[in-house]
Length: 122
View: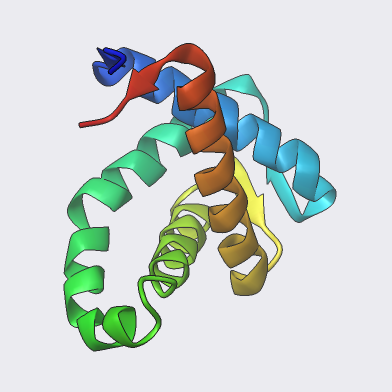
């Protein structure tokens, strides 16, 4: 049984920003930031949206979450990405469906980066 380090707020924020940047590289012009500060602000706003609004939306879509065996979570995450793009001038995403794809990529990359660095979020 391996013991992994539990990350604090700053490491999680750095991982989130790194993963957002890598996702933007994969999606190209469909997901863009105005620069380094735009990336950091976007990571913070998406984090806040995921903390405050996503649980409410997930609760409201609970039957859909159960029906799709949790895959509807990506729809909720895509919505949080679209909301962030509407709030921020420093971040743009091409459409809702690109945001859903970004949510899938973000989920995969976050797991990979956390495993690479031995970090877990619990």
